Amino acid sequence: MNNPIANYLRGFVSEARTELASNGGAKIDLDRRTIGVFVLTSVLLALFYYYGRPGFYRRGAIEQWLAEWLSLDASVYRSLIPYGCWAAASLLIRVLLPLGCIVWWFKESPAEYGFRMWKKGHAWIYLMLYLIMLPVLVGVSMMESFQSKYPFYDQATESLTHFLSYELAYGIQFFSLEAFFRGFLIFALFKKFGYYSVVIMTIPYCMIHFGKPMPETIGAIFAGLLLGYLAIQSRSWIPGAFLHWGVGVTMDILAASQKTTWF
Image 1 (tube, rainbow, N blue to C red):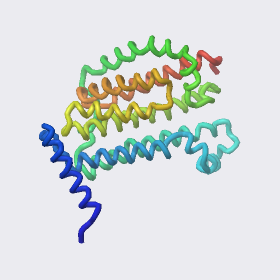
Image 2 (image 1 turned 30 degrees about the vertical axis):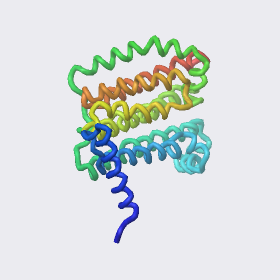
Image 3 (image 1 turned 90 degrees about the vertical axis):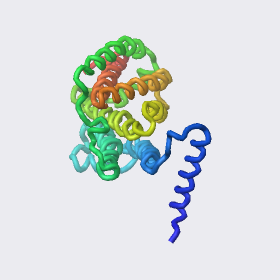
Image 4 (image 1 turned 180 degrees about the vertical axis):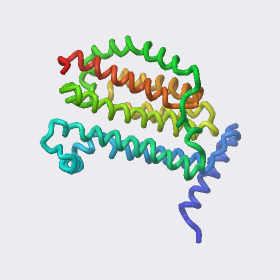
């Protein structure tokens, strides 16, 4: 029995190959794996946008159910629940589902997708990048647009417990983000597109910053290119995750310090 969807996909791939060859792009041969990576990436980005962010859990009944289950219904820490869910959704959508794709579909090792320790001698590069970013963070933390945005969690400075709990969830989100963009997406496309995979990854990475202050969104383009290149060089996204988390925590501390007395 003919499957119209399968026939359509085969026709699409055939037409794409012909178009690439006619434009001197015969070396780039589309295949099911590459198309699957693009489709899966689009689906996961959509899932995270609609069901992974803290606002989703604040609007629905999930927060109430979890508060009752954890006996936090009247607790001052109930407001942390959406951020815990944010961290859990990040792990599921940006780490576990791509890992499942790598292991069961690609039948490859996660280590080939950056899930490993970085090459010796690369850590100092990330430390230098943090030190370079530090004066920039100090400067932008004085801007109202950044003070109104960070920390995302309004009650982060109510106590040290609030702050550390939130930053832990924030860190899990950063590690999941790096695993997805600088791990799965780059290395899944690298064999086909080489270093162009870094440029491809940077487009959706920039787009997830829409709604944040414009300097940060523009900066995400350059950060995406640089962190992507370094991930390939070090064969790991993990040091980039530590850098990203460090920058995020520093931004929260500096922005909050401009508008409140700590603890």
